[in-house]
Length: 379
Image 1 (cartoon, rainbow, N blue to C red):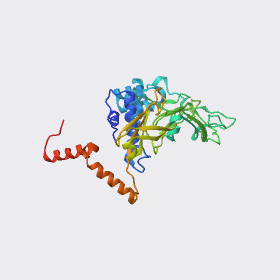
Image 2 (tube, rainbow, N blue to C red):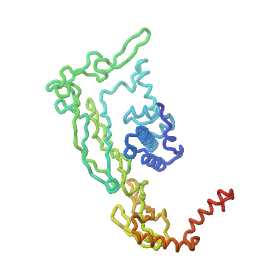
Image 3 (cartoon, rainbow, N blue to C red):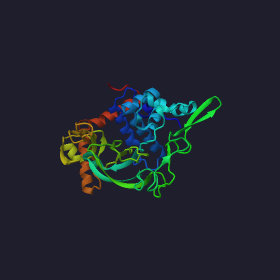
Image 4 (spheres, one colour):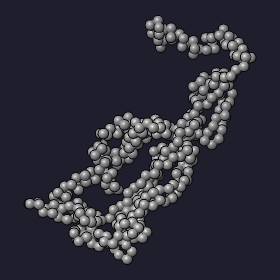
């Protein structure tokens, strides 16, 4: 299936800032996250698509490559490892093909040293762990250097020997008519050496699959989609090459009370009818304990109160967010006969001056009448 334009995936213009891109991703991540859409394949694919778009567009170097070459440039750059994402990397799509056909050794010949692959580990955190930081141990299975042969692949007391087919060059030349083709050596597969007496533990591969426990320090303020890089904790390189990196990708679980939007938090605060009508105060939970929220008299359901500096301090910014409390007037339930009678008498009293006590209800009813009568709305 053809990939969609990353800007259309996130629904942002091509002039969008990094902050706008990450905000759009957070919105989609909250909507399509697998935890919110269990067993929903389409939601899972939409989540992965949004994540991929954010990873490219929030990286200035990758974004420049994408804007110039599209998906092909990004894919070519990712295959090139750490070599970068510029035009030189993009041209490498053709280097292996045309180099072998016309006998041109790309960049002076194939390197015999290979960097290890990067790994990804998905880590789920509670909201409090993400906000205040957390240290956790994770078990990672990876290809590590064989301790018996130290990565050479050869049995103890022996060592790899120079390939007698290519003479250690890693490439061979084949003549076909007027052309002379250069291609990867079929015997050593480009390494320039062969293992005649393989190691019993790794069977000549130089690497073995091993599980390792790692300590990950998650900084305070991370959010879903953020990554923590552990340098050198990926798979071991080959032929003495450097190891790859381990990327720990953060996923914050849904919280039963708070919703997060970047540095800000929001929650619903239920208040009684009497408190909303007469005023008072209610206890509001925050990440650091309860605080008292003053409710003015005649407060309507849906009104939002802002508690400054009660949100999250983002990992990349010093400004702490706010907590937005949306008041929800709670209707009393399980009333006794006496309580029902009291409510009925209160309602009768209020109905005597309905326009005064319930202006929104009166305005709503008048608007409905104008609608069905075909009258224009009042400005």
